[in-house]
Structure formats: structure tokens, C-alpha cells
Length: 267
Ligand SMILES: Nc1ncnc2c1ncn2[C@@H]1O[C@H](COP(=O)(O)OP(=O)(O)OP(=O)(O)O)[C@@H](O)[C@H]1O
Ligand SMILES: [Mg+2]
Image (cartoon, rainbow, N blue to C red; front, side, top):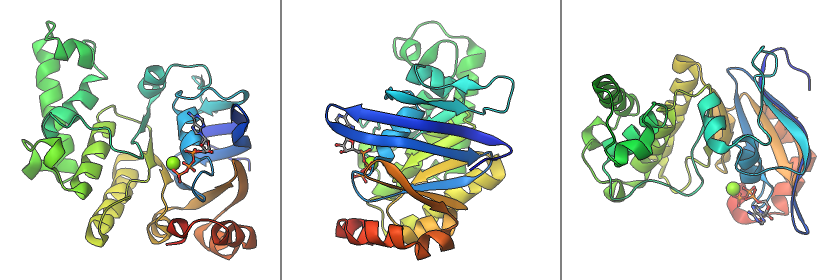
């Protein structure tokens, strides 16, 4: 598909691990401001795609460009993950990567400080920081916690947060880097129905209020269909379908891919 103002342009990306082809000639565009969902059965290549988009994996073939139509178009392939993050790409992980021994507030502050001169390592080592930086990161961390409705958990250790709150904390931390696009890898996994609703509301708010484009991997079809404007379906590393929620639900190739897959993916 051609698009007028893409935030991501992925062209012919192939990623192999030994004999396994995780991504096979994948091409896709994400429009600026769009909530685009990537779905597909277990092992389809969804997380691998996120890893390529964030500089974690280096595909053998193809190109990935971040805001390609702007003068400062950024080539992602070959760029280190922290530099991709600095360019405005933030993500959460399929399995939680919180610092369990730190509080909710401290976890968010790490995200905010990743963007500052002294950086999170410097902060941990207590290197001299400007008072301005310190004040800014404290204030911004409180704002972000408020934004994701976690103010009441400010001083709670991450290890003792309920699952839904953990997921929200991961999102707050990702927002701390002031991203232009947010990649969410199964944000609702393990959450209960009311936590799912709250997450959907948060994702939608981040998109509309903050103007952040969202790329969403999610197995919960109800959540995906209610949030995504468009979907890309992966199966065995290849794109098998692309379209609106309605088009995807009616696509025989998609139905077949899911019927042949594990039960989890069809729930
Ligand atoms: N670092 C790696 N080394 C070897 N193989 C890998 C690696 N990362 C991914 N793969 C393989 O790539 C394929 C796609 O995996 P990926 O994690 O991207 O799937 P997924 O769509 O995210 O699945 P799930 O829904 O279970 O999270 C799998 O066969 C997986 O084993
Ligand atoms: Mg995955």
C-alpha cells in the first residue's frame, strides 16, 4: 500500500535465525497518527517485527524507515536500539521488564532520564546532575503516573503491583521517552476484563490526546477490533492480509490461519 504520510515504512524485510525464517519479505506502512495492529498466530513473527523496528534484531534483507517522507528520514536497520529510541520509537515488552526492586515512581523516572544528558546509568551512579534535570524528571514522572492513573501506586514496589497496573506502568515508562510512535507487545496479556477495558481506554487516549501513533500486537480480538483502524496479519513470517477490522474478520485466509493455530489465538 502507498501512503501519504507514513511514520514507518517497512520494505521487503527478511529475518532468519539459522534455518528458521522469522520474517519473510515483509512490507508494510504505518500512517502517522494511526492505531495499526499486528496480529497472527503464535510464532508468526510479530515480536520479531517489533525487534527489527526497534533496532534489536538486524534483518538480513530489506529496509525500515522512520518518518520516511520527512527531511530527517531515519534508517532503522543497523541503528543501535538506544538511538532508535532517541529518534522517537518506544516500546513495551511481551514479558514484563520492570525493575522489581524499585517503586512505580522510580521505574517511570528511569524512562524519563533515558532521554536526559546524564542518563539513567549516571543517575544510578549518582553522577552530578543539574538541578534542573532532577526537578524536570521528578515532575514529568509524576505527570506520567497521573496520566496512566497510577498516582495511588507511586511508592509501591513494582513487584507487588497487580498485573493491570504493571502493564500501565510499562506504558508510562515508555511514554517517558517522548515517543512519536509506541509499540505495544500484547499489553493486555494476563489482565482481567476490567483491566482490559481500562487499558483500551488508555491506549486510545494516548493516540488521540498525545497524537502518538500506536503499533499494537494483541491476541485479544475484541480489544484489537475495537482499537485498531487497520490490521496487518502475519502467518509463518509473511503478511497474509491487511485491512480494516471488518475486512480482516471476513478474510478466509485469516480465518484459516487462526483455525490451524492454537486455541489461545482465537479467544
Ligand atoms: N532470537 C531468536 N533466535 C532464534 N529464533 C527466534 C528468535 N527470535 C524469534 N525467533 C523465532 O522466530 C519465529 C517468530 O517468533 P516471534 O517471537 O516473532 O513470534 P510471535 O508472533 O511474536 O509469537 P507469540 O504470539 O507467541 O508471541 C519463531 O519461530 C521463533 O522461534
Ligand atoms: Mg510475540
